[in-house]
Image 1: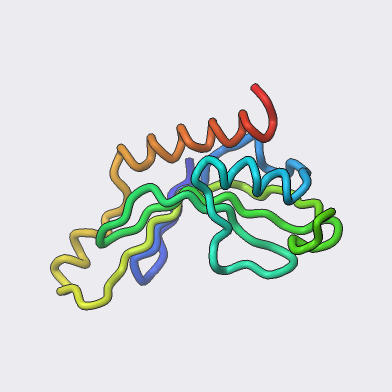
Image 2: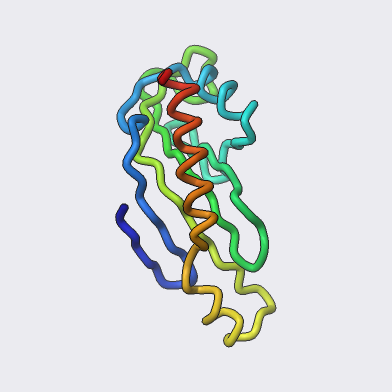
Length: 132
C-alpha cells in the first residue's frame, strides 16, 4: 500500500486490486455496487467518475473510492462501457469551524479499523464484479 498525504487534510492510500483496468458495462457496475452501499461520487462527468463507499462520518470522512473512465459511450449512455481505475482509500478532513488543535490531531490519517473495513469492502466489490 502506498500512503500519500496532501495539504489541506487529505490522505490517500492506494490499494492493490484486481479491479484495476477491468472493463465492464457501466450500468452493471453501478447496479452491483449501489446495491451494496456505493454511490457515484459528486465529482463525475461523462468521461470519468468514482464509486464511493463512505466508511465513517465525523470530523474526518473516510471513503473507499473506485475510479472509472468511459471507454465506449459515456456513463450516461445505457450502453456505456467503463474501465476501472486503481482503488484507494481517501480520508478528507472537514476543517469548517474547528480549532487548529483539533485539526492537527485529526490530520494523522485513517484508523486501522477504517483501513481494514475498506480492504474488506474492496474484496467484496472484486467478487461481485469479477467473481471469486
